[in-house]
Amino acid sequence: SQTIHQWPATLVQPVGSPLSLECTVEGTSNPNLYWYRQAAGRGLQLLFYSVGIGQISSEVPQNLSASRPQDRQFILSSKKLLLSDSGFYLCAWSVQGAGYTFGSGTRLTVV
Amino acid sequence: QKEVEQNSGPLSVPEGAIASLNCTYSDRGSQSFFWYRQYSGKSPELIMSIYSNGDKEDGRFTAQLNKASQYVSLLIRDSQPSDSATYLCAAGGGADGLTFGKGTHLIIQP
Image 1 (cartoon, rainbow over the protein chains, first blue to last red):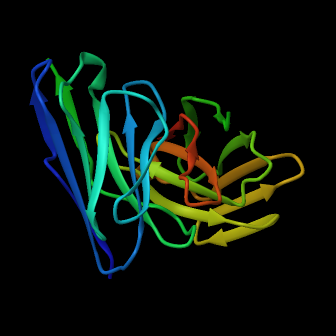
Image 2: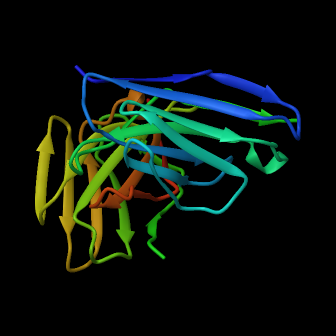
């Protein structure tokens, strides 16, 4: 069966520090991968998606970036965090437009 | 701009009654529609998907889709306290991700 792993679960980082969040998927090949952010009181916002290794599409211009170095690995990064980057970060995967499955999420607090 | 609109609630329903949740979407090109349940502090969990007009039933859940009206609904029969959560409606169809509503907070009163 397919599983998605996301870590860490919680993170407190100072403003201006770097960020690296990792997501891996097991049990499937060539999934579409997504990074969403859910800020307090707001809906899920699509940040990046990837349909294959090295293929990244950005939905929202910001100081975040994403990379897909392997078929089932998706990484979200930032060189310098802002207070506004706080939120609940969710990785998700899908195959052929079927329902998206989310990881357990990372709650990021920038202080 | 693709949008999905939901009433934020809270929607309060007595235990055992039918809970009715609704959403509308703006992109007529959307082909796939989903309902997710999200407990506080947890990630969303897929509970229903629907792709064609009409009703789709799965246990106590029924999803309804009306593409002409750009309207999606979710009915929860025999509501239980464990159904208390935020329900997210989502629409999409391609590899470029889903558009989510902000969610409806549902409270089932024992």
